[in-house]
Image 1 (cartoon, rainbow, N blue to C red):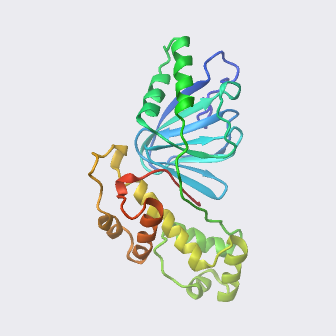
Image 2 (tube, rainbow, N blue to C red):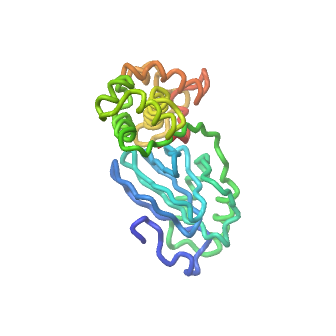
Amino acid sequence: MSRFGHPVGLLELPLGAVLVGRFALAHGHQYDTHAHPTRQLVWAQYGILTVGVDNALWVLPPSRALFIPAELPHTTAAATSTELHSLFLRPERCPVRWVRPTVLAAAPVFTALVGYLGKAELPPGARCRAEEVLFDVLTPAPVASVEVAWPSDDRARQVADALAVNPADDRDTAAWARLVGTSERTLARLFVAETGSGLGQWRTRMRIRRALELLASANPGGRRRTPGRVPNRQRFRRSLPPSARRHSRAVLLTRFGPSSGVGCVVGCGWGR
C-alpha cells in the first residue's frame, strides 16, 4: 500500500474489478491531498469520515459512501475514530463513470458486498458475480451542499482560521479588524472579494458546517438506530453554542424536512 492507502501495482495485477482496503483511523487522522489512478469508493463502517475536494467537504456517516473519480485530488480524514473501507475500482472494469464526487446510499446490501469482496480467498467466479451486483446497487443519494471559499489574504485568512476553530465567536467585523491589524472597511472588502460573501454570512456558513458535523455524529460509533427511536432535535440544538442555536433550526428543516429526526442523518456536503 502507498502512504495514501492506494494498493501499489493494482492496475497491473490480474485481480478483479474491485479491491477493498480496510484501515482503522484514529480521530483526527488525515490523508493529505492526493489522487488515485483508479476510481474509488470510500465508506466508514463506523464513525465519521470527511472527504474534501477544492472548496467542498463531505461528511460521511456509515449510511453514506462517496464515489471519487480517478485522478481527482482530494483529502480524507477521520472526524471521529473510524474504520475506512476504500474500494479501488479498476477503470477498464468499472461501468460507473460519474465525472464528479457522488454521494451514495450505503444500504445493507452494499455494506454486505463490501465485506464479502474484502475476503482475499474469494474464488474468481464468485468475486466477479459480487462485483456485478455491487455496481448494480450503487445509488446516488440526495445531498445538501454549503460551500465555503477560503480567503487568501493573510489578514482575512487569520479571521477565517479562527472562526473555523470556533464558529460561535460573535465578534463583529470591527473587532476582527483590530485583531489582525487592518481597518473594518478593508477586512469587509477582502471577505467579499475573496470568498463571495461578507464576514457575517461566511461565519453563518461555518456554523452550518459545524451543525452538520454534529448531526452526522449524532449516531455514536455508527450504530444503526432502532426504527422510531431518534435523538430529540431540541437536545441537539442545546448541544450547539448559544450564538449558533438560531441557525440550527434552518439546518434541520433545510436538510432533513420538518418531520425528520436527527437519526435520519445522511451524507452532507459542505465547504471546508
